[in-house]
Image 1: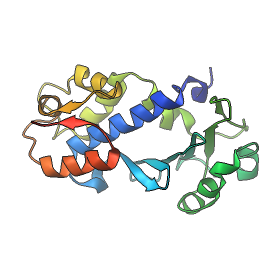
Image 2: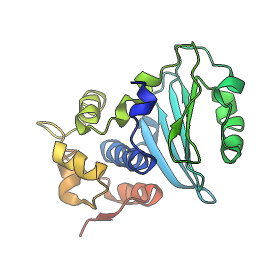
Image 3: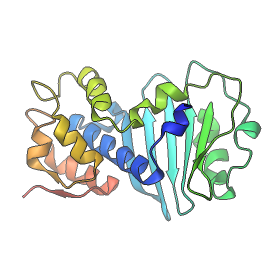
Length: 207
């Protein structure tokens, strides 16, 4: 099955976007060192998720009242023909896909939810990096944990990130201090985390 057809529905996809952004915010106080970030106030009735790895790979994702559109950029592949990729793209996504920062960064693949709420994509014969960039959304907490314990090696909880905590975040459950401390040892940037959670619009209770 094509990787984009394995994506969870939009609601669960958005929930995972928020969850992994929360986890990155716990593991890195500094925004520039995070892979995943989420802005719930990106525009009027618009929310934005970004993946950046510092090597030229990006996911730029817009959520709006129409649905969701994913713009992928993989540094190992040339940009695909945007006219072909966006055939049938709902007009409500055009400003995002043809405007900035997408126009400058480029597009190797584009996936969106159509008016039936299903993921849609125009097949090309070009390699585009979808599998590499979308595997994180397989709804398996271990996928994030394996990656994070290597990337954030010095900041993860000794003994490993708690899989139950990651699953709770994937489920959208309220974040508690106990959950934070099951992800990262010696955690101290509580105020910064509260600000990040407000931006992500993720529920928490640190009392």
